[in-house]
Image 1 (cartoon, rainbow, N blue to C red):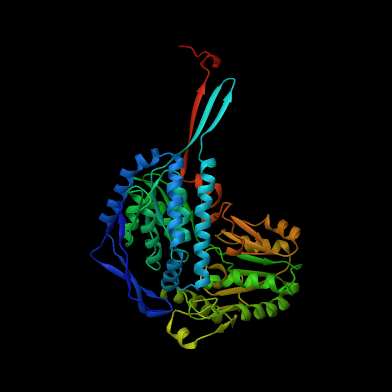
Image 2: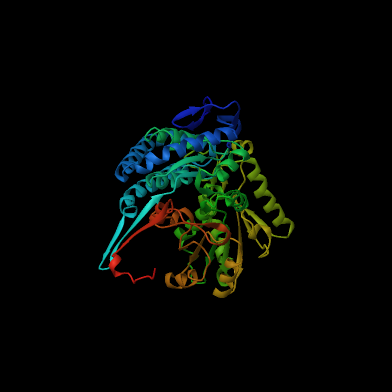
Length: 492
């Protein structure tokens, strides 16, 4: 499906802005093929974008909420119309299977529509009339939002920020990852036309651009999805001006299989396999370590391998039989391979999973065959580090207390899952330190955009999705009107 490479530009103040330098984005399935080029923007470009957003903010914030929602709905309609084109481009530049790219577009559109649906209610003034006075609570926009997004779900992790921020009356400068810059830029270009110039901007670039977006005094809020280590630099850069932040960071999400989990339930076992290997394991909320009650461990491993070998089919993302494509980029391939090699060196058993449909495609691309790791130590790197790729360790536990201790012994706490008899699973779930715990499902299969999503510990600050994902882009402003005569007399 090779086509001519596309070229995307920054969008600043409603105009496409070309850069002196460009960087290529290759096709992970066929790295010799360049899908497109993104601009290498400069610090000065970032300042221009921030200044444009700051200049557009007063008028946009003063725009009636109903009009802001209407404009966002119009932008969503444009994205929906372009979805087939975006699915193809996303699969080519990212490497995710076509059905996976379609799923990302579906979730992105569903969230943006939900944000519009709830905005009128959650952002309206709340008025309380009392005998001793009246109080008005408003949800005021913050100002310029810097949004920095990763490569694994570039559309959904951008739309999760764009829709609530703009509907709430903020303006935005977005910076995408250089590992998946093309589709999201095309989406922003399309959406920006539905808003006044400067309301929605996008820039690309290196660290100096990122530093400007996180330290510029005109930026009021930072919305970042990415690695915990990068977040520490962002927090330091933002400290001088005390910026508001929403940080959705790394996770080493655990799945707990209780002794009353039915290992013969093929549908449940397939859900677990998908929760480990969807998007090649490159999802923040994927189940990255699996703890199984010792009494069912051996049978579980047998049934898991059967389920994995049925579902996992590696190859070209546009082959309708393919369920897992390549890893997105070469550095990530090396990171995952390092963890697998380390596990082997420590005596763990590494079992390849799934079917390679086209060996030639597999050899040419950034492919890694998914693996199951058995016999790893509880503190081995394959267990305690976030793999973010197609490998998963399975370890035994003895009882509920042991399982909870193992799950919580981590610097992360994004999502988790508990599998077994429902009420038993809920009791265990209540003891787990995580932003979200799912019962008898995991990862994207259990995601619901109507409810808040985010992490605890070093997995993040704040929440996205749900009503809270909209109000997080506002400041609470209390206007209090007491009846003066009711106040106690204060001596002169």
